[in-house]
Image 1 (cartoon, rainbow, N blue to C red):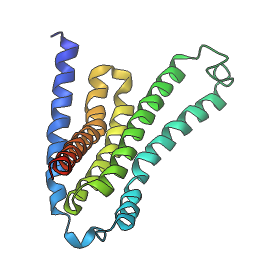
Image 2 (cartoon, rainbow, N blue to C red; image 1 turned 45 degrees about the vertical axis):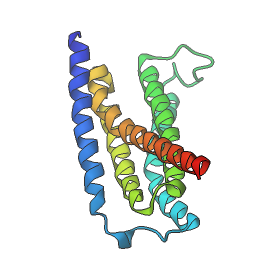
Image 3 (cartoon, helix red, strand yellow; image 1 turned 30 degrees about the vertical axis):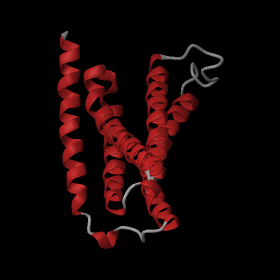
Length: 180
């Protein structure tokens, strides 16, 4: 591995440790803080946490819009200009934030109705990690892959873990249904 790859491995390894710790600590959320065990209540509770990824997306959109408004070279938009180096970075951050937000919202919604009630504790942890991860991703972006690694890991790994867990839970339910 080259030095950049080694640096990325270090930063995403730290992200993995933080994510595992946060998901583990989420088990301390008291049962009384969870919603009633019925689909509408589960979804309503989960959607409250979706505000964090959506706010991160809003901030990314606003940063692009504000930069475009204030920068004559970029005001006409990417369809009409090549764009300055700054707008290219802001657009890359926005694109990644949009992608991660879509994964998060989908994972949260499916988790709300498919996971056992106690497992919903991971959603607040994932949402808080998303917000922290986006801040770190944005702050580190200009430093390249190493600078983005920790923020990317904190944002993406909870989503990946949720989606893999959901796939396993749903596959096991399907197999039980077929067998039963």
